[in-house]
Length: 53
Image: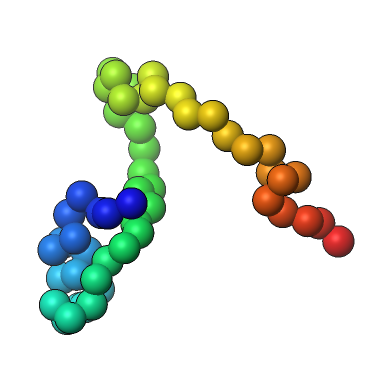
């Protein structure tokens, strides 16, 4: 997944133009009236990805 604003991320993290941002994760509060918040994706069960000891 390519970040939407790689130049902003590059600036904020002081990354040179020789580095490529290949993944990012958005954090924050949802906009309650946005249709994007109605889009749900299937999820793998955590037990398929994590092993607890």
